[in-house]
Length: 527
Image (cartoon, rainbow, N blue to C red; front, side, top):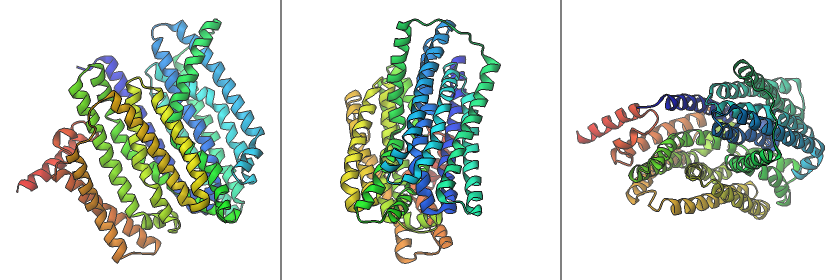
């Protein structure tokens, strides 16, 4: 029987999950119309600077609020201790954010040159202001989550994203019609991040003032050191792991254009091709929204089994999480590869860079598995193993970029991304095998999955080989049609040949609907 506290946590988790899903979906979807308005060159300008904004949001939304909420939750019932934590953390956040703002603003010209484009300096300075909003956003979100009140975080996050996306698209549309140059358009688009952040801060401040009154307290040096150390160490660990893909994008911002110039491209052509390469990001994000949504929904089951020391339940939950991730992310990866040419043209107007984008798509499967393995490891208290793994992967990605981009262009960057992610996945897998010494997937499941993926890929491949549609509307028809047919075949095969059994469905989101589908398929099989 769920306790009152369990219900509070569940209610809060639903709020945060819904907000996270909406935000991630918006973050992926808006880039398609934005690219259509500004072209590959305008998209390159936006994406070059986006990782800096992404780091600020990782700090303000993901990593630091989690650490703050943990510190607050550990002091539940001790109001004075919570006051001290808030005072210490507020001071450190302000110091960190002001330092980040000053460094970015002052060094913007140098950073832009490092990215191979001095015209980016103005946009970098615009983005630097986002860091000034970080203290309030991170502190208030962390405080509310520590009090098990998730609604303010969820509402502020969703409203912030809606406002940001609206300003980006409306601003880009107006700037394009007014004939502004693309760099000025990029600055206008990035200003949406500042306005969205200000509104989110006001929403959080409203909830804070309305609900809680916390007075000032005296903090000893020992208390300051202890909280500061824990805050920065655990905060860095969580932010590095959750910001893995943002850090990979940041590496590309510094390496792709410069490497393409070494490859023999002119500066303008190199920047244009970087914009083509950046088409992979919204596709990757859309893939991760679904695959990680399913797999992370199973993490509470794994945690509960670990706490209860239920070895059988733990093994069953881990096997199911791996199976679901492989099934969903595997289908997405193979599907995206085989429909990439029509999908590319449908979304981004041309089919430029199709092969390079296909080379990038294994990142969907690799990233999904990394997120799941890292979450399980952190649930077992192995906080720093995923961090070390990600840092190793970042170094591998940098070295691979240095070697491959001058030789292969943006194809080299795609390969380097997958190689870096593969190293991270390997490190996390080996660490998890030491913690949980049993096979994470059966040979029977792998064989069934491989057969289902092969069957799914046949229809899009046959369509592309014998009846390719080359207009944009035709490509849309081909991409959507082959996805629906291939996806349906994949699901039916997986159900009919027991790749997923009926017991698995009970642990999944929308399990009732999925169970009914499974039952209908199995009934047809017997008939």
